[in-house]
Image (tube, rainbow, N blue to C red; front, side, top):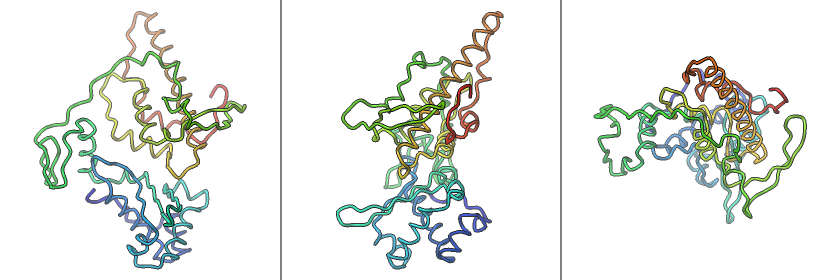
Length: 303
């Protein structure tokens, strides 16, 4: 990534003002600096929104003592609940072989990327072989830094059928049966039940690919790059979050998606009984569908 979008009044945000009240302007400067490090680590082939360095590397980068930077990280890690959704940044502090490591994850960076990075990612996702090399070589199929684009992007293939096994979804292979699985107690529809999952499968990238595979197809071709940003923004599948929260959100997504597919089937059957053809353009876009719900709210009967 060459640059990212930064609001002119970002300093007036609740998160920025909170950091300034705790750490002075140095706190705001470090917050922006962390975003820069995350942006610098992103490119079209790797859209990971997290960076991990030792405490010593972080403190050297900001030219402050390790203690001050760790204090800053812990303040960011323990933001008041009302600020966490505004900040949308997740912090993880842990030790490995005697070193203190700090990991920052900022999913909102996907929405702040420059246009070149967004287009490059879309191109790479369609043709992973055509990736710009470190030497600067760039195949004609990827837009260059100068803005030239020899070829128009291919449209996604139009897929019209709803997957046949939609009612047999088993948590998209995220519900595993190997020795790595853990058992969690979930509470939905006013009752509790046990659920087994494999933690290794619960990365937002894996869940997004399954969401992409399962979502009902519209007649028009679907652009998934902006949906990926919305999926991560709405669901907050961050590595530093407790596994139970991720599983709860994913369970709610799969339940509501099954309900939506049933609604579509009912509408299709009604149109067929009237001798009419169902217009798939009426199927909501994935981004619009994700915006309909608060994924932290418990499911209720009839919801």
